[in-house]
Image 1: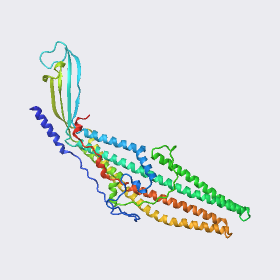
Image 2 (image 1 turned 135 degrees about the horizontal axis):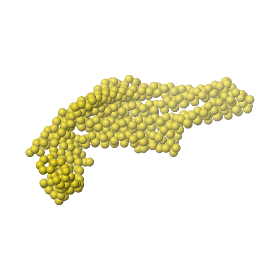
Image 3 (image 1 turned 90 degrees about the horizontal axis):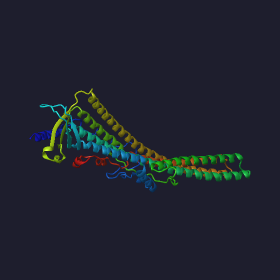
Image 4 (image 1 turned 30 degrees about the vertical axis):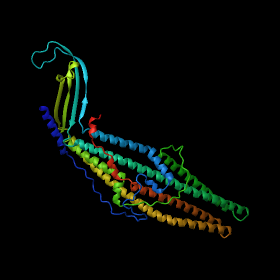
Amino acid sequence: MKFASLAAGALCCSLLAGCAVGPKYQRPNYQAPAQWKSERPWRAAAPKDSLPKGTWWTIFDDDTLNGYEQQVLASNQTLSAAQSRLEQARAAAYVASSALFPQVGFNPNLQRQRVSANRPSLGGTPPTTAVTQNVFNLPFAISYETDVFGRLHHNLEAANASYQASAADLQNAQLILTAELAADYFTLRELDSEIGVVRDSVAIEQKGLQLVENRERGGIASGLEVAQQKTVLDAARTQMSLLQQQRNQYEHAIAVLVGQSASTFSVAVHPLKAAVPVIPIGVPSDVLERRPDIAEAERMMEATNAQIGIAKAAFYPDVIIGGSVGTQTRDIASLVSAPSSFWSLGVSALQTVFNGGRNRAQLAYAKAGYSAAVANYRQTVLVAFQQVEDGLSGLSELGKAAQTQHQAVEDSQRTLTIANNRYVGGMTNYLNVIQAQESLLANQRLASQILGQQMIASVYLAKALGGGWDASTLQNFQVKPTAKQAVQQ
């Protein structure tokens, strides 16, 4: 009857877990703008129209880029580290959930001992002889913290929120690295285009030098014109070397991203001739659910909010149900007999009365941590909106620049044709031809650069929109206590 009474009392204590202290987490409201500020050379997203989930880079329709992106996901070491951090966070959440179950220990022991003849006596006749005996113990110890004030549940809440934040961090790392790879790839392709333009210009200027040298030998041109043409030719060759040096650096950067040695990695030359993709744009509030960095910041708010609950629970006692059961005997033959059995059951409460203000300081620390997490969340949202607006305005202005620059290239080509014809006809000096050559080269290079910038701006706009990711996937990353855990080590 006494055992039943103690057990009933312990059960009542465990049911008091509904008295958990600490603030209930509520996601802070953030008033997103109703629409984007920039002009729209794109189309708004339909209800089921968004970037490809998980493979947003396929919008560029480039098989080579697709292959490199898959290598990033499979072999990038930064992603491997982020994956390991996610596994650590999952394990930490399981550690936190284990505290919700009884802790059972088994400590069998065998000893042979001699008890002193002069041992103290609790009453009666004092002992006069020493005793040598065997002692066999098979004890089981049970301990269960009832979590009356919610400390353990808040701890699990914080661990799960951190687990989800790690999952969002992994997704954000994937988004950053795949976007970096795409940007480097299109920069390299743009440099291929520029190198091709300069190479063609070198060929044209080489022919121009031969023309001027022939005219000099015929007494029609002067040595000055030959020297001027050589200067332009040498400058173009210098530009090609510098562009090649830049290309090498981007090739090496891509090698690191895909997890390969820069010494053995190479990218085949292929000038950029891509079309700028149409990126579906949703409303600004969509960004709050599609950016993994925003989701990570939001999950950290819940984790720090749970820390406030843990700090508040420290002001209340820890209620623990403890007990032991087993057998003890001097003779191993009677180890499993009823007379050798023993048990105990009790409830204890541990409450710190004075600790130099530590609990108050921990609560203040937790509250400050939550305030910092809220500020970080709001700042992350502001930066996200900025990055989307940067992408939208950048594509808009670059689209206008591409149109006018295309016209500038055509004008430069006509100017060079006219200057060459006038020079051959003796109607102008060679300086006009040189100026026309330099103008055409500069405009062709600028046209290539603008196309490259358009592609890179598209990459970063897709990244700013979250790369097709959705925060709802984080629901798959949480640990829920199960009955199976009760019998696991």
